[in-house]
Length: 438
Image 1: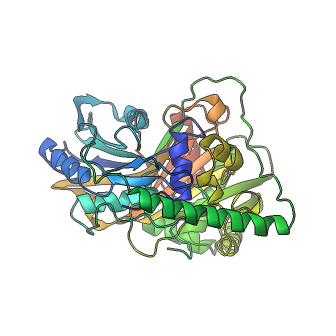
Image 2 (image 1 turned 30 degrees about the vertical axis):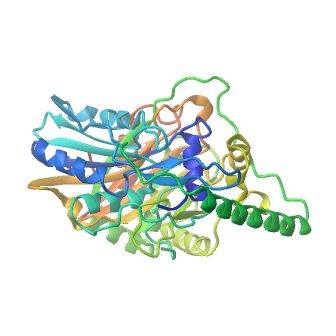
């Protein structure tokens, strides 16, 4: 089934408390009560699909961890007692607990009834298993869309973490198949050490690498942190027209809006650094097939100027730590790798444009979806694990709507989900965008 990439292992370490915990989540809101039999069928398809795998540790020092097929999964979780629609994001935020891509199930399918007569369905998965686009592809496969080969090899990935990017120039337990043969592990270890030693020697010939920038904790205590969430729906026509009116694109408008939300929340600096994930797929794959770039946004910037900054940024990617080969992070102990890469890819905001979702996701069987959202959540987050990122934004298009998902990681600046929703609505209205919150 292939071996883990550098990015896969970055996210795997977060499950061991080394970094900010991250899980991917897809949300479907239906107009009527979801059929339990349908969800059981989707659950069964996911068990045997591309998400049905787990991490196997190597026996040979220097060899990469590998993937093993598994049908082990959490049972389908159905809550028949309706919750109020004002509590649906709080329920969604709680669906990421207990995911473990190595020793326990790495994904969970759950659903809850809403008091408006509809339902909310959640699929969460460990970020080690897939990025945002990869999760979408896995669901499309389970719903009978584009067929993917379960357990396709994981392609070598990029330098940092995040979800996928629409406008980028780039392009994923039960019984398993068994761990890789020791002979193949020896070959992989030789390859890894060869790359590391050769790359390190080349880096040292250019001088002693700079120490990578270190992210600092915002709090010296270790208390639980409750993130705040919002999902807003906006017609595609309105969004695209607003972008064109400002000589921007749908994506540059998205980045501008998230930056303006952070300033409106009380962020004082005049420059906001934005992290932009880049999809690097050349074919549909369920894995972490991405890299990262970034731009600096000033208060005078517009969707037009941001468009030019982003275009230039997509031609470069964030480099590995200190100019050393990124494979170094896979041959040294996890705590050393974490220390060397800590904070890599983190900026003041994250803007992840997941792109257009497949048509299969517009309905769940006979049930019409009022909206489909994709985002990352942070189960079990504590103050010492808070990243530099203050606000994360995720944009996807489904049919005639854009769905904007927001996650606030600044408890001081964004004090509740209601406050985040109000902040987002006001910022969008200032750009002439009507938005309908979930």
